[in-house]
Figure 1: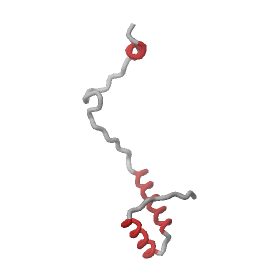
Figure 2: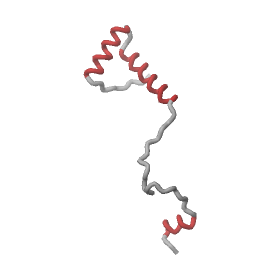
Figure 3: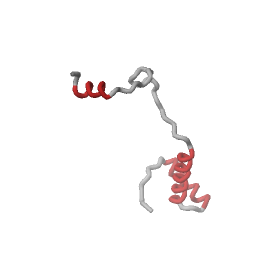
Figure 4: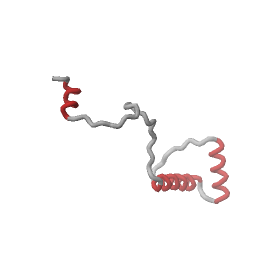
Length: 78
């Protein structure tokens, strides 16, 4: 097990303290359970990507460069 530090707002710290008293469990155990819950939930959800849509191409379809065009762009046209 590794030690780590977590910064909580006053409201979060107080809520955690009260929950630990109500449940009769250590605060660290509740924090670990919450972290496991977030990780499990993230692993079951399909990954989604955010995009601005237009990108550099102004929304035009991507076109692959041929090797000769790429060479000319890098080395300068012949």
